[in-house]
Length: 118
Image (cartoon, rainbow, N blue to C red; front, side):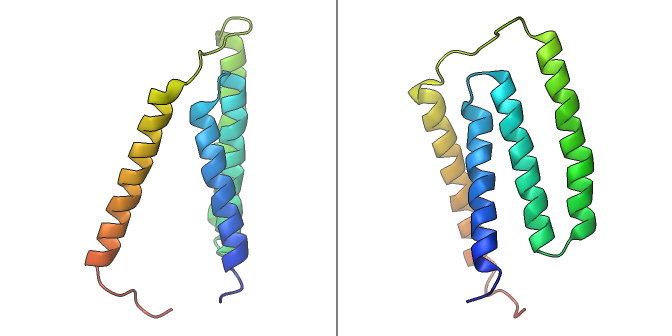
């Protein structure tokens, strides 16, 4: 097994969990913090894969934009602005969309043939 498998698996798990938290968070501030965690986990994945320039761009551009978004959310929403319970329909729609995306990727990979040797 490759040396990078475990760090990549952990990074992917953090990215998936933080992306779910962005969608399912009740408060906008919590959603923005989850989006920041997602951006940083994607930058960490880029670093693991050796794309240092892309990782730095990810941190500078997207994480910097998240800070601005955080300020806009705090400034523009009413005090204590919160969203209702996500409900089973919203969670189910996210699971179905994610499953459809994974099925599409699996179908594309199976039709494209074997991967070239690395």
